[in-house]
Length: 381
Image (tube, rainbow, N blue to C red; front, top):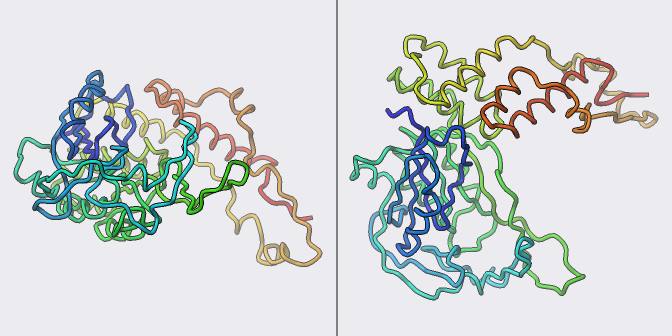
């Protein structure tokens, strides 16, 4: 198993992948992007040519079953899909604040060309092309066919994949598409846990009213992150593969601020001491330094609810004459946090250009220490 982190992104038009580009670690990545429309492949390659990751761009329409189908190239090519627009939601729109226009589904998703394409499953593609490294990270943005792609890649999901970042939908914008609950249930079946939504929602409104009469729309789509459960990885029989998977999973997790999850991966990998060896890649060096520093952190915790309240005090919060005062739920504001020196762990994160993660660690540290002082979440008077 390669120790490089391999990211596959299906629906690569525009050259983007869903996993962030981290300059300090990019040379540790293999970056593979797919798209069904050959006309956009040159741009995908051009937009990624300055990244230090190993790059491969693949002309393929990845789907749920092997065969042939018509692929809709739409008025806005970024909406192109194997699926047609749903007539019931065709009039829905959202206001694109960044570009200042109304984005109406029946306009943007109107086909201007139909391509007859060969559809191939991810499992078949990897089986047929032995030069392809299986995905540690699988991200999908295919306008309504995400579920089918996952179905066609179940063997890959079970054997190799550690993280899935999929565009998910809460309303049927494309006819017949599966929704978030379906995607989540499928991934749960194969050992993944839902972590969080990773970007803002697209809010579609079913009714288009004039300026001055507009509110929030219906939250319709976003990207969702799923991580493979640590217990699932622990069942991998090959100890070398298990060790590498745990380290990769740790790095992916902390990239999305899942620090405790990452440390638990490292705790498990540290048990496989015979497999540790000398770090070959930057992410491995960073992870081991982070894990070593984590052992020096004092074992201090905020009080638990039960430590804070007796049973009678807990019940008393809801008596009719009780006044509840909420104080400093965050303990410190960012203005105060910025005046406090970094911890050794926060310095390490900044050294590797993980500044947003360092900021969050610092904020959580300050909030936790506040709880150990005079600050309390809730005071009963």
